Image (cartoon, rainbow, N blue to C red; front, top):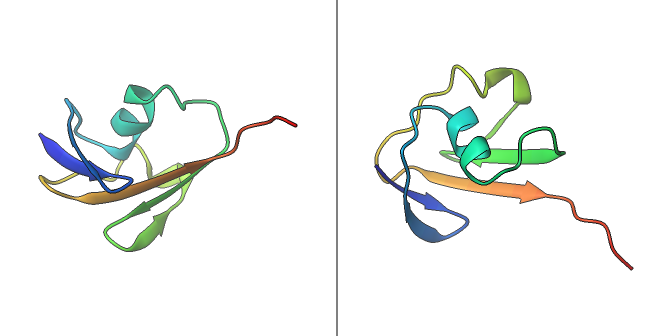
Length: 65
């Protein structure tokens, strides 16, 4: 299904927010998720189903210096 992730159209095999997190290899990392204009807490990721053209923002933290 097509989703808008961080402003870009992406074709993903995903049913839930957790599937999206897994697709981008972000499981186990600190991630903030906004979907449909709302912050989605980690305990909601498995239950929150995605819809075609849903806008999802993923913010994750990277180290460096």
